Image (tube, rainbow, N blue to C red; front, side):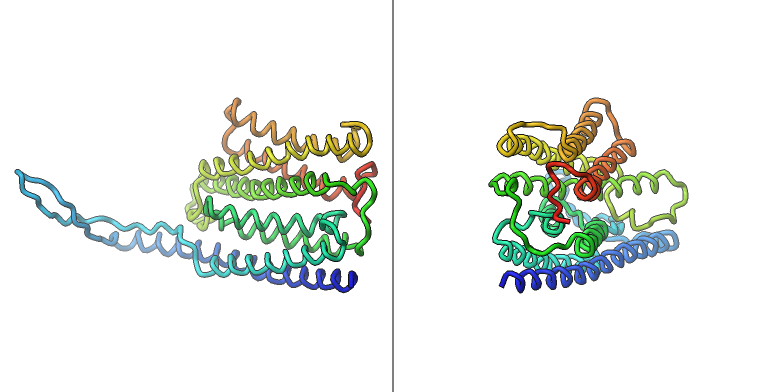
Length: 329
């Protein structure tokens, strides 16, 4: 029964990846369509007068209410999503349903939380990244990050299924603790916000580059996105949430280490890199808040932090030996 559930989990994972690919293509077509719409609107505005619309305004003249029609210009904003964006979001939701089902089946097969090794961590982590991306839409329209999020998910799931897959095995003694649920889950959630912040930082850098160019024909789809300053603010807010979660991860890890090994800190490789990530993002927040770092400098620092997260996830977990060698490989 356990083997069958694990097999079904893998099948659902591949199915989710296929749907993510469709979503990625739809988001990419949305970007191309936005660029075309902006170009068409620009050509139309340069060759024809602006479309005039009228609105009625009530004014008071000598005690008499007078209704006047005032001409207004309707300029196309270009910020509305296309049908490809709607298809991309629908496919992302469908892929996440399949993705979560694969996570649940893996957990049932293992009879524990499904993040006890590298494959399971990758499976659950990517699902949470996509879930955070979808939930954030209720706060801010960040659908333009669909290409980045689905692309990142496809890459990470591909690496996990090819290089990290292992059969279901019992947890090592040190992992048999309720801290596995708390510590690792919060770390995954923090990683999700860091990934979203990295996507916003990339968008901010591209927007800064585009706005600094004199040629108006470059990267037209970026005209439908928020400006560089707004993207920088969004990056900061998202990374601030991730930093709070990562701070809790660091504290919870120290408490768990004391319970498991009798010390809060032992300079283990995993502990050191977790602290390095915290320092990078703390430096990002401090530099932006007190040193006035704005523009490309802050975005590059945000991307350095995410690179450290990916290095910690991929290289440290696999190639460095220590007390945190739980990759299962």
